[in-house]
Amino acid sequence: MKTSNTILLPLLAAGLAASALTAQVGPTGSDGSFDISAQVSNADGRSTWTYTVVKTTEDTKDLGHFIISFDACDDRSPTIDNIVSATVNGEYWLHQIVPTEGETGCGVTSTNFVKFDNLPEADTYVIEFTLDDIYAAMDSTTWLKSRTSCVKNAVLAPGCKGYVR
Image 1 (tube, rainbow, N blue to C red):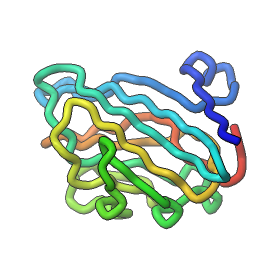
Image 2: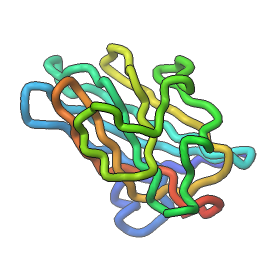
Image 3: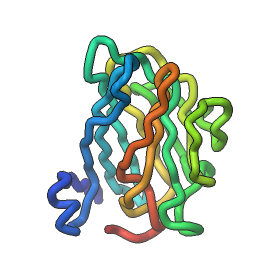
Image 4: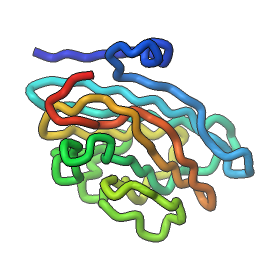
């Protein structure tokens, strides 16, 4: 049986089950900004997370990296090893995810995160990964790296294993 929840930000604030969040993020400088939304669906004992990142202006530069924190639930959070599939804009990306920041300059504070590296040129990025179990939607952080700017954002991300928010 497949279940899919889609809840908007006002419902999240009300404390109800949540699986979608949309926000505009980005620097005010020349690199532009992005709209980002997150969705999760649970089926067959796995959860699939989809992040859609859209440039907001013609001047917005391409993303180089998408980094997401997985440390919302300590030792019950997933790690990169729990990702069974990953795509960017429908293309296989499992070979281009890493658990290290490298030289992004983003100042990632999480000790448990995944970086989607070498993102292609695009106006819209659909970043999707499937985890080997059900993980609740929890408040977390992403970092969007675009040329010289790196923007930290609040998003929903995988949290506690086996728990549904």
